Amino acid sequence: MNWTDERVETLKKLWAEGLSASQIAAQLGGVSRNAVIGKVHRLKLSSRGRAASPRTRQKKAPQATTNAPSTARRPRNTRPVTATIGATALQAQFEEEPVARTYLRPVSDVVVPISRKLSLVQLTEVTCKWPNGDPLSEEFSFCGNEAGESGPYCNYHSRIAYQPVSERRRAR
DNA sequence: CCCTGATTCGC
DNA sequence: GCGAATCAGG
Image 1: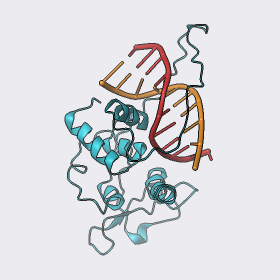
Image 2: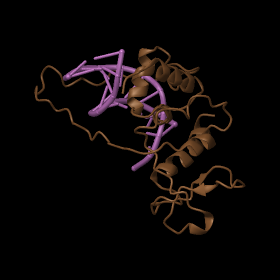
Image 3: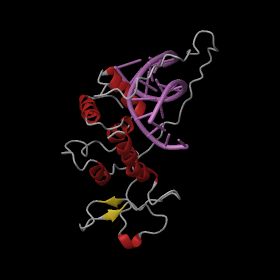
Image 4: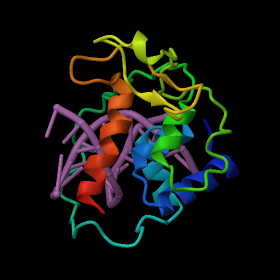
């Protein structure tokens, strides 16, 4: 996945709006949060208002010269995720923003499960209860994918459901 | 443990 | 330039 003008634009916008790198990565799709952060730095728009904390790095002695030259790089699993982007979920997440191009993003490899579009009566103890759309609307449905034991949502929706909360507690 | 951004450095 | 690994912290 390369950084097209469009994607960079989105990155800038979302970053300026205060979204976390991982959230932006999820929006863009196909990139990790590290990729986003790296790009942000390269674009020199790191600051975003205030410095988080006067952190001072530079402590690590990189195991370069003296260490074993063996390629210790770990070929981390490149996740072959293939799913549909949860447009409605994104909507809920950014309900206050105009939303222009985020939802017309190519839905190729975003880490969002395909909604099973269950109705209320179809929910069980193990179905994700993430709502899709307006509860008053005809098309309203629930995600319905398998929910872990840790909550009423599937893995993905647990994150986008709870992450912003802890974020607002901390940052805003 | 979850997360955050920051930095380094092999590619 | 890119981004995984790592770091430092909440």
